[in-house]
Image (cartoon, rainbow, N blue to C red; front, side, top):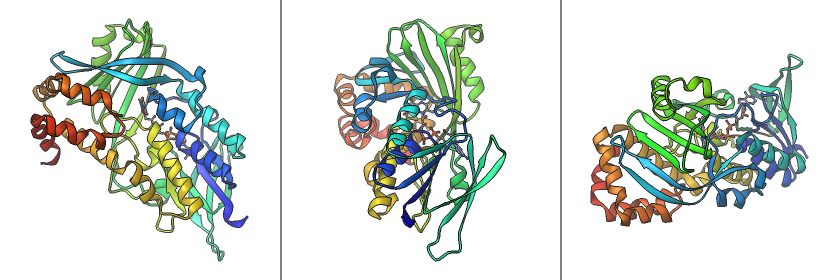
Length: 377
Ligand SMILES: Cc1cc2nc3c(=O)[nH]c(=O)nc-3n(C[C@H](O)[C@H](O)[C@H](O)COP(=O)(O)OP(=O)(O)OC[C@H]3O[C@@H](n4cnc5c(N)ncnc54)[C@H](O)[C@@H]3O)c2cc1C
């Protein structure tokens, strides 16, 4: 039993799904979550594709807040492309986190809320154990947890990454969002621009999750956008605030220590699609790779990069190009995608897998090659 202990930091999708898979495989799993309630506070819009979710989790129907059949990508000149969505859903994000934690608990994982990971060191015994320092916030005591593997699933500002020397020079977007009453036609509106990305994601025809993500001046960008969408005096209408940092995928970062005993999963390893800043699906893929690496003694980084490394890298290139576009180039981009042949490609592929459609689009539309060059030069 000596080599069977796993300590996981963070009870978000990455941590709880890793806990579920490893507990199911017979490991002794402990999950430490710094907040009192799993899933809260929420910092997420909750847009995912249903098939991705149901493939990995039995998502209960009551966690689906809305189903969306179309999205518009809106250029700075207000021209837009309308694309059909096959199976996009809006989820109750706090409920999702609790659902995955429930699966893990049922598989035998133990959860400790109100417990904050502080740091770790290697023990001196022959089998080098990891000794993690975890603070019980209610008692004000720091406990020493002996473990064979330590998984950092503790989000963008990962303390595990810092303690393991894996934090690097990662960069972030600031995400700011409100849930607010606003009339809408149940389509996602997505506004890419030089300043960042802004969105309106309906919960129903009268309420939406409206927000932005930006590298700098996020507050002023947010105020400008929400005023344009909801109008002056929006503050009085707000139902809820959600905000948090979003890591930008960094292909140079290492996601595990050399001995493979400390692993980073999800946002902690910057596993986020750069153009849309979605990371839930990626955190589940990362968790599967972490569980496979530990149970089958394989290289963790190779496993997850094989599944999504190319897609994350292509997404990053797209984002880099988009950061350099001026408004005129955004208008051109939307005009190019308005053509039926290009729209059809966008509608037929999963946006989590750009490797499957990027080349097709570039071959069909040489103008895109010129725009793509911006990413590289
Ligand atoms: C505004 C916004 C909108 C977003 N919208 C979407 C979207 O629509 N679709 C999508 O796919 N993604 C979206 N994302 C990204 C998505 O939320 C993340 O990619 C996802 O939550 C990553 O899951 P995770 O488990 O890696 O990290 P998290 O969900 O951040 O979980 C990390 C957990 O670790 C805990 N923790 C942190 N430090 C410690 C510590 N020292 N000790 C103990 N516990 C600790 C935290 O409390 C948290 O519970 C959005 C993000 C933001 C900010």
